[in-house]
Length: 75
Image (cartoon, rainbow, N blue to C red; front, side):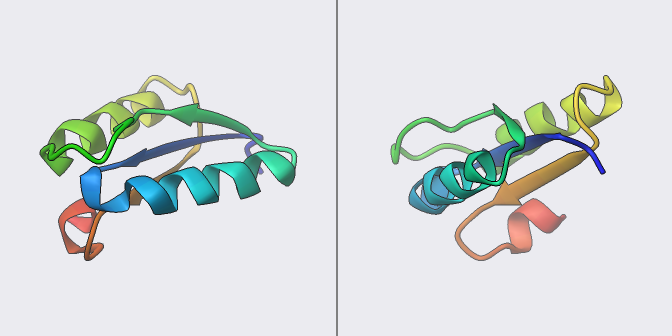
């Protein structure tokens, strides 16, 4: 299992991302946070791409993507 997890969100997932990030760190994993870093409106594909790029570059094996509904990030 990977000890490095990439996490990313859009503005709707910002609060959940921060809470989840804290829990992941408490579990002993390293976190690569691809943003967003505020609740200001952003486009989810921009942040999904940053997370996927980390997987493709083998910086982490797992990514958690968070948006308001979960549907956008799953596409």
